Image (cartoon, rainbow, N blue to C red):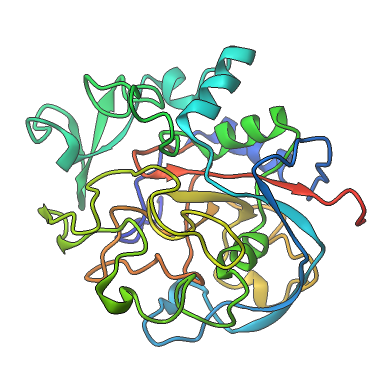
Amino acid sequence: MTPQPNPCCVPSKERAQLLAISQAASATRRRAIRGSTEDMVRLDGGRFLMGSDAAIGYPADGEGPVRTVTLDPYHFDRYPVTNRQFAEFVNATGYRTEAERFGWSFVFVGHLKDGGPAAEAIPNLDWWRRVDGADWCHPEPGAGIEGMELHPVTHVSWNDASAYADWAGKRLPTEAEWEYAARGGLEQKLYPWGDELTPAGRHLCNIWQGEFPTHDTAEDGYAGTCPVDAFPPNGYGLYSVAGNVWEWCLDWFSPHFHRVGTRVNPLGPPSGTAKVMKGGSYLCHASYCNRYRVAARTSNTPDSSTTNIGFRCVRDDAASK
């Protein structure tokens, strides 16, 4: 029986044959050094404290224990991959995403003009609808991406994100690389900017305000995705590492593996059924999912795609081994 996803996870579209391909493709960490470093930030790496033992976390997610992790230097995309960048990839390669090949993807019910009664609902996750024709260039029924060129691309699976990264001469970040980057040089803070969600009443990320899932007040200015540079960067000059869209990581998800696995350039378990996602999204709300915290984590199957999952890439530092 397929495990029931927790409330912050989006529903899965498991395809056994694609899962086997994903497992083979990510069994080891592959160095990527041929991609351009334009719009990337070089990070020195070194030691940092990963994870969290905070009481507001989710023990079942495996956020803790806090542990010392060591990373080699690497380059990290300043922004999530945008619709404009993904369009360049598609135009250059003719690539078709899994949502396009499947013929459908998951759309948040609040973004359907009629509330989505004709679309297939997901048991126990009433805010999701399976929508025919939804994909990266048609994120909502009857809507394209015109005017959203600088928004993060969505409706991309882990497999799609990996294909883009390969084309760009890069790769997806490990969870440790993602978390180190998102912390922006701060140690054990809840958010990329500190411990207060809205310091002096100022919104610093794109998440849900109001009552989920029925009413989003959009106090932060957005009720869906926002441009990747809409909010200030963290201490490393990286944008949109909290909220907006979940970001795929290279690692297979496990709530326990990091307790025994290596803590030098950790990769996660050698196989699994779901991939780590970090950062939270515009659908996250403290009443049910405060996983926009830096240490928070969740997962989804590598062929899943929704209106709130995107990604960014990393490139290994050519001078390090």
